[in-house]
Structure formats: C-alpha cells, structure tokens
Image 1 (cartoon, rainbow, N blue to C red):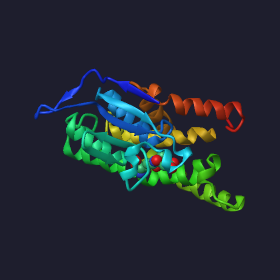
Image 2: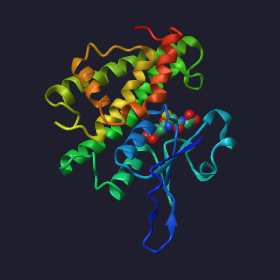
Image 3: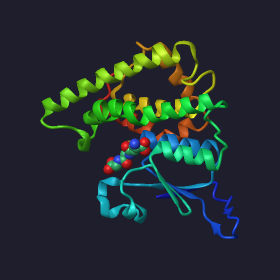
Length: 245
Ligand SMILES: N[C@@H](CCC(=O)N[C@@H](CS)C(=O)NCC(=O)O)C(=O)O
C-alpha cells in the first residue's frame, strides 16, 4: 500500500531536475519507524509512505532492498541518497530539512538528544523489545524450548526495570522531559520503544515520573495518528485476553 503525504510540494533541485518526495519504507508497528514517521509529519516534510511486509520473504521486498546490506526498516530514499537506521535518518532529516528542529537549542542539548536516541534504539529496544516483549508475542523472535524463552523474558524484565529506574531517578528526577524542560526527539524515541510494554499490559505505576512523562509525550501532535496500528494491536490483544490489566 502506498500513501502520499504533502506530495503537492514537489522539490526542485538547483540543477533544474525535478524529483518526487522522499520515500519512507516502514512497518507501522515498529518503534524506530514510528519515531521517524512522526518527525516527518510534525515537520511537514513531503514524503511517500511505503509499508513493507517482511512475512512474505526477502524476494517480495520492494526492489530498493535488493541493494541493501541490511533488510530492515525504517529506510529512507531521498533522490540518490539512501539512509538506514532510525538515528541516522533523523539526523539526516534534521540536517537537510529542519535546521535541527526538535533536537533542542544548545549544542549540549542536541548532543544529549543524539545520545538518548542512540540508547533508545540500541540498549532500550534490545531489553524492552527483543528480550522482553517480542519473545512473548512474535514467533520469529521467541526462543525454544519454552523454558529458554522464559529465562530470556525474565532477564528482559530485569533489564526493563533497571532502565525505568534510571529514567525515574536520573533523567526525570528534576526535569519534565529527558533533555530538559521541553520535549525533544529524544522523548519521542524513548517513548516509542517503551509503549511496546503496552502489549503485555505493563503498569508504570511503580515509576510515577515515567508514567506522567509518557502521558505528556503522547500528547504531541500526530502521536495518535502514528500509533493507530500499535493501538489497534494492543486492542486486539486485550480482546483475546492476552493482556493482563
Ligand atoms: N536499529 C534499527 C532497528 C530497526 C529494526 O529493528 N527494524 C525491524 C522492525 S522493528 C526490522 O526491520 N526487522 C526486519 C524483519 O522483521 O525481518 C533502527 O534503529 O532503525
């Protein structure tokens, strides 16, 4: 399925060549994809969204993936430039289109923002997604036998708890957001990973500052639009009684 967003603003290159809007290849439920998509929409960057279905095997992926070393999303194609990994894509967009919008004003805040983005899609996603949530719900990410899967999930939960303690007692102890008093892309990235815990009916009540920070981050413009697939999936799990509240 292809959908266009803001494609009426066709960009004209200096050399007179016309090019269409950039293409963002994504899986809508993926945290890294949701964060990039939200940034693109919030900053009104003309783009074409292209949903990727990995379930049909590598041969069915869109042609651009044939030349890619990593068969992963998000992937951005902007004319001749191809960028992969959410952090690199966000950096590219902020350099080329937004004058670092959403990364904070001072260099110090911008670098803290970059550091938190790196942590979000590295360590945090590994613990929350690959060790705790995905092995419980996604066949391709679970370990066998079942007893080994349980050990991984337990380890994942311990790591998730450690990360939440750090957010609660360090980042959010005195600040409203992760890099200071204003919401930045760092908040979006960390929150886009943490909401994966909603698949399990996870309660953030033991971490009240994280809980209220998450509520604030979700109030951003277009958050709900970008999280429709995620919210629908959580709804499905609830109806199937797979989520314990
Ligand atoms: N480190 C990557 C994470 C990207 C990632 O994990 N992508 C997953 C979707 S969440 C993917 O493309 N998986 C391919 C597959 O499921 O086969 C980033 O920050 O962009």
